Amino acid sequence: MINILLNGCNGRMGSVVSESVKNFPELVIAAGVDKNATVSKDYAIFPSLEECTAAFDVILDFSRADALNHILEYAILYKKPLVLCTTGYSDEDIEAIERASKKVAIFRSANMSIGINVINNILKKISPLLYENYDIEIIEKHHNQKVDSPSGTALLLADSIKSSIDEDTEFTYGRQGLKKRDHKEIGIHAIRGGNIVGDHEVIFAGAGEVIEINHKAISREVFAIGALKACKYICSKSQGLYNMDDMININI
Image (cartoon, rainbow, N blue to C red):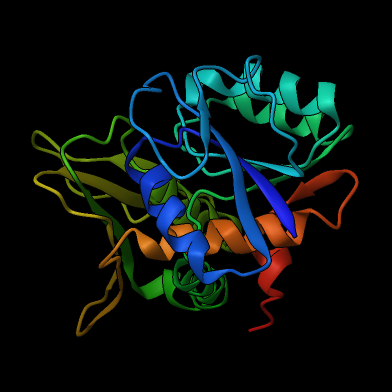
């Protein structure tokens, strides 16, 4: 049995993970951590990591980017593997994660959906083939409570496209004013509204045709399932930085 310490247990995703774990007989949430410790669940909830007294094997984080350094220090102190599902990290945050991964095993993905990561690998293959004759645009849609924009997933897809193309390209975040589109641009556009779980669309617009690749998250459960599978995967590692490609071993 793998015991999980769920950080951010009373947030949107924390609540979904708490339900989804019931479908994983080899996993159990041993305890949760959340500033809002007044909401009860079927496991102990502590207001901070330091106050947690439960034994655990892995930390699953669905909190906020500004809590990163504290979580990394805690994982290193107790020598426990860590699954980071939060987005909105800065370049300095990414460097901190890489440094910490030399001491403990860390799993990080901008999107825990297996489907998104399959699409990401497809984009790596087709983008260099299409780039010469197609303009590339990315549109992402999320609920009105999401704090980071563009989404971590949109940036994941954009980075994969950019890195797969030999020519110089640049990201353009939205458009305003009177300026013709430059072919080297990869457009990234964010929409926020209602309770949209997460939609991502990559458009390859050519002279006589348009190719669209879409992923629509119907339920947050898809992210919870990916995160719980990551907990199983990372527990067998002692140190290093891992992602969804490592776990699902995509070879397209």
